[in-house]
Image 1: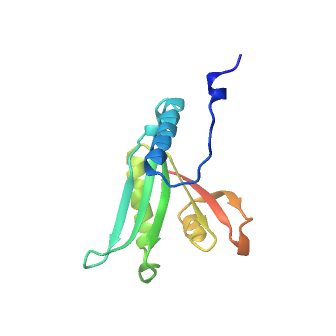
Image 2: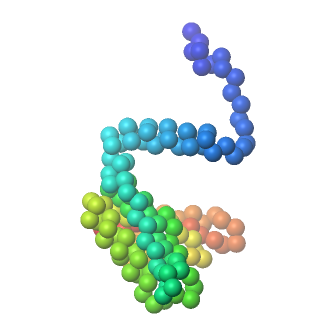
Image 3: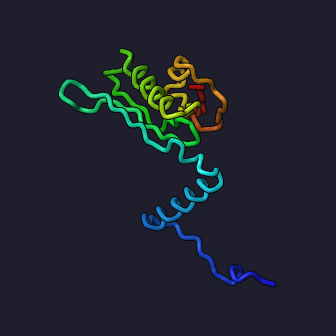
Length: 147
Protein backbone atom coordinates (compact mmCIF):
# COMPACT_ATOMS: atom_id res chain seq x y z
CA UNK A 1 0.00 0.00 0.00
CA UNK A 2 1.36 3.39 -0.99
CA UNK A 3 1.54 6.20 1.51
CA UNK A 4 -0.33 9.36 0.43
CA UNK A 5 2.96 11.27 0.77
CA UNK A 6 4.50 9.20 -2.03
CA UNK A 7 1.99 10.67 -4.48
CA UNK A 8 3.01 14.26 -3.70
CA UNK A 9 5.26 15.98 -6.21
CA UNK A 10 8.18 17.69 -4.45
CA UNK A 11 10.40 20.43 -5.80
CA UNK A 12 13.77 21.61 -4.57
CA UNK A 13 13.94 25.37 -4.89
CA UNK A 14 16.97 27.60 -4.35
CA UNK A 15 15.60 30.86 -3.00
CA UNK A 16 15.74 33.12 0.02
CA UNK A 17 12.35 33.04 1.71
CA UNK A 18 12.48 34.23 5.34
CA UNK A 19 9.03 33.01 6.36
CA UNK A 20 9.66 29.45 5.15
CA UNK A 21 13.18 29.50 6.63
CA UNK A 22 11.77 30.44 10.03
CA UNK A 23 9.02 27.82 9.82
CA UNK A 24 11.53 25.04 9.13
CA UNK A 25 13.86 26.25 11.91
CA UNK A 26 10.94 26.37 14.34
CA UNK A 27 9.94 22.80 13.44
CA UNK A 28 13.51 21.59 13.92
CA UNK A 29 13.76 23.39 17.27
CA UNK A 30 10.47 21.90 18.49
CA UNK A 31 11.58 18.42 17.39
CA UNK A 32 14.90 18.85 19.22
CA UNK A 33 13.17 20.06 22.40
CA UNK A 34 10.85 17.05 22.28
CA UNK A 35 13.65 14.55 21.62
CA UNK A 36 15.84 15.97 24.44
CA UNK A 37 12.83 15.93 26.81
CA UNK A 38 13.23 19.68 27.24
CA UNK A 39 16.96 19.63 28.04
CA UNK A 40 17.62 21.72 24.93
CA UNK A 41 15.86 24.62 26.66
CA UNK A 42 18.07 24.50 29.77
CA UNK A 43 18.97 27.21 30.45
CA UNK A 44 17.98 28.53 27.02
CA UNK A 45 19.26 32.07 27.56
CA UNK A 46 21.53 34.16 25.36
CA UNK A 47 24.62 35.71 26.89
CA UNK A 48 25.68 38.77 24.90
CA UNK A 49 28.43 40.91 26.39
CA UNK A 50 29.83 44.06 24.81
CA UNK A 51 33.15 45.80 25.28
CA UNK A 52 32.70 49.57 24.96
CA UNK A 53 35.21 52.39 24.70
CA UNK A 54 35.05 55.68 26.65
CA UNK A 55 32.40 57.15 24.34
CA UNK A 56 30.25 54.02 24.45
CA UNK A 57 31.15 52.64 21.01
CA UNK A 58 31.11 48.84 20.86
CA UNK A 59 34.69 47.70 20.19
CA UNK A 60 34.19 44.04 21.00
CA UNK A 61 31.77 41.44 22.16
CA UNK A 62 31.08 37.82 22.90
CA UNK A 63 27.73 36.36 21.87
CA UNK A 64 26.70 33.00 23.27
CA UNK A 65 23.79 30.60 23.41
CA UNK A 66 23.02 28.19 26.21
CA UNK A 67 21.36 24.82 25.72
CA UNK A 68 21.64 21.31 27.15
CA UNK A 69 23.39 22.89 30.17
CA UNK A 70 26.14 24.03 27.81
CA UNK A 71 27.55 27.42 26.78
CA UNK A 72 28.13 27.79 23.05
CA UNK A 73 30.37 30.70 22.06
CA UNK A 74 29.02 31.71 18.67
CA UNK A 75 30.76 35.02 17.92
CA UNK A 76 33.67 36.65 19.73
CA UNK A 77 35.45 39.74 18.44
CA UNK A 78 37.62 42.58 19.74
CA UNK A 79 38.84 45.40 17.51
CA UNK A 80 42.56 44.96 16.85
CA UNK A 81 43.60 48.12 18.69
CA UNK A 82 42.03 46.79 21.92
CA UNK A 83 43.55 43.31 21.83
CA UNK A 84 46.29 41.95 24.10
CA UNK A 85 45.21 44.02 27.10
CA UNK A 86 43.16 41.38 28.93
CA UNK A 87 39.75 42.37 27.56
CA UNK A 88 39.22 39.07 25.73
CA UNK A 89 40.08 37.13 28.87
CA UNK A 90 37.65 39.27 30.88
CA UNK A 91 34.84 38.80 28.36
CA UNK A 92 35.16 35.04 28.14
CA UNK A 93 35.51 34.62 31.92
CA UNK A 94 32.38 36.74 32.46
CA UNK A 95 30.41 34.72 29.89
CA UNK A 96 31.56 31.46 31.49
CA UNK A 97 30.67 32.75 34.96
CA UNK A 98 27.16 33.75 33.89
CA UNK A 99 26.67 30.40 32.13
CA UNK A 100 27.92 28.52 35.16
CA UNK A 101 25.51 30.41 37.42
CA UNK A 102 22.70 29.32 35.05
CA UNK A 103 23.69 25.68 35.49
CA UNK A 104 25.96 25.16 32.47
CA UNK A 105 28.65 22.56 32.97
CA UNK A 106 30.43 22.75 29.62
CA UNK A 107 31.47 25.39 27.08
CA UNK A 108 32.37 24.87 23.43
CA UNK A 109 33.16 26.78 20.28
CA UNK A 110 35.00 26.59 16.97
CA UNK A 111 37.69 28.83 15.55
CA UNK A 112 39.98 28.89 12.53
CA UNK A 113 43.77 28.79 12.42
CA UNK A 114 43.86 32.46 11.37
CA UNK A 115 41.66 33.44 14.31
CA UNK A 116 42.30 32.49 17.94
CA UNK A 117 42.90 28.79 18.69
CA UNK A 118 45.84 29.63 20.96
CA UNK A 119 43.74 32.11 22.95
CA UNK A 120 41.09 29.50 23.69
CA UNK A 121 43.74 26.96 24.68
CA UNK A 122 45.29 29.49 27.09
CA UNK A 123 41.80 29.89 28.58
CA UNK A 124 41.62 26.16 29.30
CA UNK A 125 39.82 24.93 26.18
CA UNK A 126 40.96 21.67 24.62
CA UNK A 127 40.75 20.73 20.96
CA UNK A 128 38.39 17.81 20.37
CA UNK A 129 38.07 18.04 16.60
CA UNK A 130 39.84 19.43 13.56
CA UNK A 131 38.95 20.01 9.92
CA UNK A 132 42.21 20.39 8.02
CA UNK A 133 40.98 20.13 4.44
CA UNK A 134 40.19 23.78 3.72
CA UNK A 135 42.21 25.46 0.97
CA UNK A 136 45.34 27.50 1.69
CA UNK A 137 46.18 25.45 4.79
CA UNK A 138 43.28 26.87 6.81
CA UNK A 139 42.32 24.66 9.75
CA UNK A 140 39.13 24.74 11.82
CA UNK A 141 39.36 23.75 15.47
CA UNK A 142 36.52 22.61 17.72
CA UNK A 143 37.21 23.26 21.39
CA UNK A 144 35.56 22.51 24.72
CA UNK A 145 36.03 23.31 28.39
CA UNK A 146 34.43 22.02 31.57
CA UNK A 147 32.97 24.87 33.61
